[in-house]
Image (cartoon, one colour):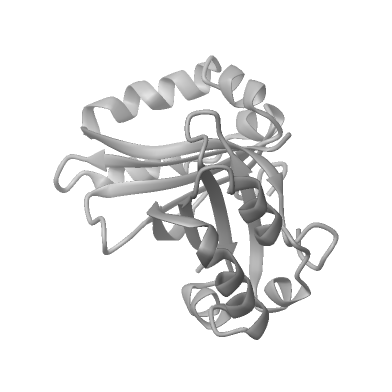
Length: 104
Length: 104
């Protein structure tokens, strides 16, 4: 069952774009680990936050990915840039109005 | 620029699955309007919420979709099921570690 992990990561003032750079660094590991989407973005409504949408083949794959050396290294590199403010939610995808229709 | 709209919709007690059914009803309109992903799900952490991840070709397409008759009808159908609790965030996607790597 597809698993979604969406979150907002608070960055220290002026450090947001460094955080974006770390999170968008190309990683073949993630795709191999079952990551379907990993979209990183920003919003004028949250100027010091990096926003992320992740979709995984299932929750176990997402959980296992946190043990990958490349992911652990990225987390370690990102930690000093974080303000500590975090939000978001996770869920199991149960369906889509796009199933079997157009772009999926 | 890809646009992400993620949100949690509170359902009245016992009405969550009816809300899921409305949001997952197949819709060719959304794909035609530029919807790339529309994943609807649930979570034990939020038993009375329906959680949604939407990805659109851009913010304008998402905004325009709210005027589609089928979308307006679905919103109208869903309203009586909502508790009023809502959350989430929107952002412009600036990159992905999956760009040019494996599954995109």
